[in-house]
Length: 216
Image (cartoon, rainbow, N blue to C red):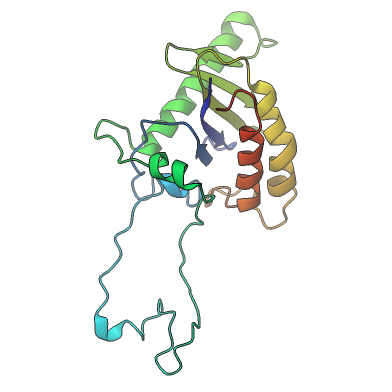
């Protein structure tokens, strides 16, 4: 058994965080403007680096080498933060070339949210408002949901034989999420302009997931 990926959606229905572990069929990068910045570098729209003239290599703002002294002076790249470094064995297989049949990430994130919202509403209408949608299973994966009172939705995709991981989603919320996101005065919790750009949260979530017996 294993855990494939984690999605977090805010109260505005936007995917604000994504992280994956054992995933073989990777999504294609989202289109420009399809997702919020800093959701995940792995699915952020690719930007072509402009070719630099060799005669200007030491005078451009990106230069890190002083032509006079040969001393490293500055780096000023305004790009999303990189994900956690991975061991060589994982790095070689974690980001294979995306399949041509794979969906762009912004479409995949909308599909996941749409399924969650549809099943959640269906259960409330059929079974009553006291019933909650917590998970469903297919032949290839199992989806687990935990929703907070403030409207954030935590979704994990796992092996179909895994037991309920709702308690894990609650641990992510009560642990790293409250500690590094909610209680962080620099995080805009009601912003529609940025994802969860916090490496402490990413590291804490990664440690929690990797410590589970279901994670292999």
